[in-house]
Image (tube, rainbow, N blue to C red; front, side, top):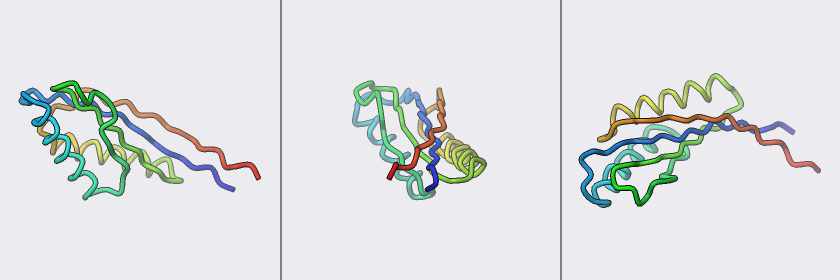
Length: 103
């Protein structure tokens, strides 16, 4: 049985124009929908939900090929940075290996 490999990332954006949580939700919704539409990726807001001008998004890319995982994540991050109505302030990525179930 083969192990699974996941590359995950936490992206933090600063939204200076957000004056309400509604403004922040609009930026979040647009960015997540555009990214999901373009890429086959798991993506969600994962932290700072109640912080007005900070948006934290988690992304997971699964592939058996390490280069493909890294290239995909890099492309997703560039895409998000170019299309966000916010400034990307931090990216933290982590490689995870899932062990197969013992039978």
